[in-house]
Length: 78
Image 1 (tube, rainbow, N blue to C red):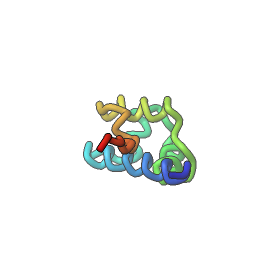
Image 2: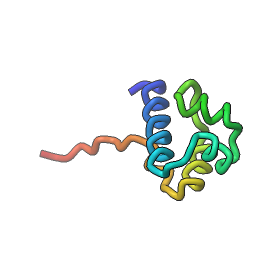
Image 3: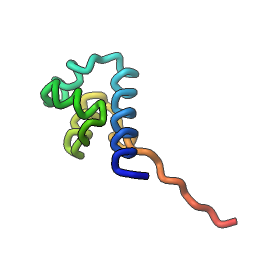
Image 4: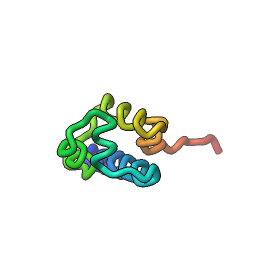
């Protein structure tokens, strides 16, 4: 998976978590301490979120930031 694909997945998970919380983009940006324009750009995967930003968003949503990342496939012995 490329960096761009990861960035798109993470941004999509952030948007989904915000939608599940019933919050607007402006509200979550404010609660996370991000400028609304920065949140907008990053939530559309035009640039990557930093770890600190993801933690701030997760805190604002009261969710685990690990949920923003795709799970790796775990290989099992046959």
